[in-house]
Amino acid sequence: MISLGDAYLVEEYIINRVHELYWKDDINCARTAIICLSELFEINVEPQTIWSAAGLHGAGGYRAQCGLVEGTLMFIGIYLHLLGKTEKEIVSSCYNFAAAFDKSFGSLRCFELRPAGFSENNPPHMCENLTCSGIEFAYQYILEIINR
Image (cartoon, rainbow, N blue to C red; front, side, top):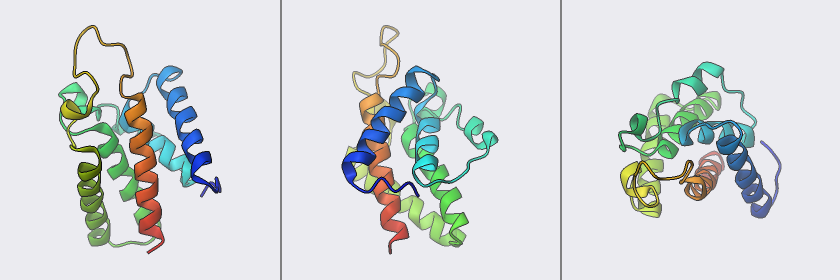
């Protein structure tokens, strides 16, 4: 795991990395979540996994489940499997993450979380701040899991 030590350094890392992935690489929130979490926890994620999340930004723009949730759930499955957790433990951790995210952010739905909703005139990457908050939330949640 990246020994970023204090929360400020983790927050700054996430802010900078999300900005880079959004504006330089132009990738979605789900892939951004997987990449950031894999870097923070120093886990190699296969390129196919990253590509599998290409349509997971609100179910391909359908405005369903938030890509931050989907990407994090994918990462939790990968990471906890590598830690030797059972499928039952992984499923429980995913359920608990979804419940905690919903409680903290008020929804799991892209349609409800996206600032200013959806419009053809919206600038790209409107969820950048939400993405940073969501990834930091996910990082802290995963730390709690592994420290139990």
